[in-house]
Length: 278
Length: 358
Image 1 (cartoon, each protein chain N blue to C red):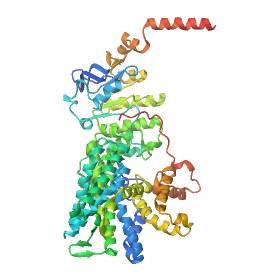
Image 2: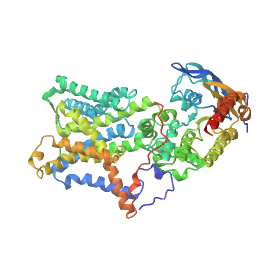
Image 3: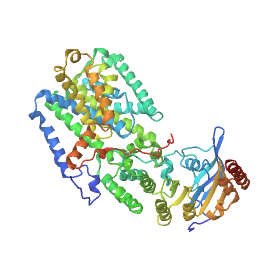
Image 4: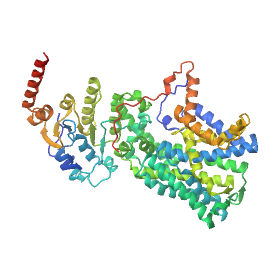
């Protein structure tokens, strides 16, 4: 699994905190993502996983701490500059361009590779035409990888949920990222589609050499594809390690299932209820 | 039913998708160029107005239909273009130069008006542009030694390096050439990264940003381009109408322009021209219809407003894609008959849309 080199760091978060008024959404979170690995954030709802994503893509500004991508600090950058560094993302609730075709969505994904000044585009000179062809070729590669040929000219507004999820992944891939942020890639997908998603994440990492940072709830998918897992709860880091290590970590089990005592008391209550009813 | 067999990416890049396009649009352009010899002067004048409003419609379509920013003060740009052209033309500047200035000044004003668009959205942007419209109307009325104030300003004929174009066939052909050029510019923009960035901003700002689109820059650009097109339309309007007064560029004109793009069909280039045709044809139809109505209704003062309003409500309720959408449906019906399904154009409601990040 691990093609990653522990010595190198692609993205590093140091002592990251974000405060919304009285709520500490992210508290003192630090982690390193190594080039070539699949790094997963897990945790119960409201743990602050998506917030970490939003901090990386500069939708939020951290109250304290720093994020560096290949040594460059992201904190000083504007949100639109993140993509040009080679960081692409998907969204938990799918943010596609609804009134455009799948092909157009993927073409928009190539925005950071545009080359020509406005006047050339207005005249649609030969150079613009040539780069449009090249853009299309790159997009077709993504279409091939994700098997989207059938939907190329379909409007996104009419697509089923599972396909939209793939289109969004495709749009992120079309930017040619070095780091791909996937926010719950399997949410809303059926078992078969989740299986496809796992294959694609593997392919993206192995064939395209893209590092993946993802938030995911489906533990089967997580243990299948991730090299390392970071568990969070209420904005704080609980555990970091291989999927197996994290899953057996007592703190993580407690965050998901509660303490052993809680379960016991719950059982007693249920029993007494049952007795009263019975 | 036509099936297009695609063998190269150029087929998707080309403006004409198949031979039918080449034939029909070629025929349309040929007929339009032949119009001065085919139709009477009155109808030629109406066609000129459709072309002028079509250019303005393209501008507003770029902003409202493709970038998703609504402006309820677009008549102000029309006014800026018209007055710039009238004043500079009056000073004897050659037409291409004064036209470029009219477009440039409108674009500059557009950028200034676009500044609130970087912060406010939807109805609030509408209010900001509405306020701007009133400011410009007021400036046109008060800045008397330049604009002539409410007394008005008469406009000289087009001076194309000594060749004077009246308001007849020559001027019509000038408008036609400019309208075709404007359409090509819009079409080229839409098939290149800039146009796609506009569409991205319209559909989801958050993901447009995450893909690397500089929202502020592209929104300003959209405002500037839209204002420049509207300024171009304004300059031609000035020559066509040959007498300017501030009340031509008020709120009613702005609403007419917005009505034009909505009824034409938001998000389609055809829609700009179809809407313009609607806007110009409607008063004629109303005038004809008046005679058949009982005098109490037919002679009522606000009849035109009522008809426009009813048409707008009707379109918003029953045909949100506008006249162009209606045409698409008719064409599909003809192509597929007898297999046309009623729900063919019905958009699937998107489920799973929770609140967006701002």
